[in-house]
Image (tube, rainbow, N blue to C red; front, side, top):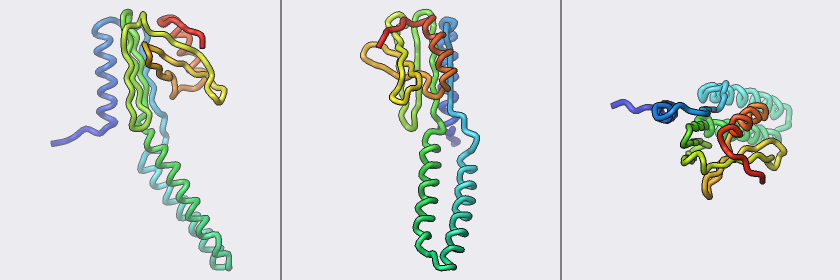
Length: 175
């Protein structure tokens, strides 16, 4: 028995959600975003080996001339690169999708291992524009007591376009 990979399941789930919403009513707004990774998991592994080999060769050369004290720092440097690659790898499958029809909306997002879902009646949903603590724009979608950040995987220009599109289908509230 063959099992599908998490990437395939996630892609199929998004396609099903999009087609299900589209089969009921035509969407007023339909957006799907995902991480843009140019380096695969095996590619990160190769680069980690190349970086580690380079660092350890230089550190071994320094140790041969008497500067053995840098060896632990070389190992720590490789550990930090591995940790950065590991954190990036945990977010390889991140995505966001938003489908808005005349009567309802559905937002789904994945951030690392956490998958969130917010859906409901479009007339009761609101969105809010603001800035995060770093000064870049932030869009929040609110329904009842639930709030999610939309456009997390987009650039500032793309979030600006999304804001304009969301203003056409949702009510905006000031924060």
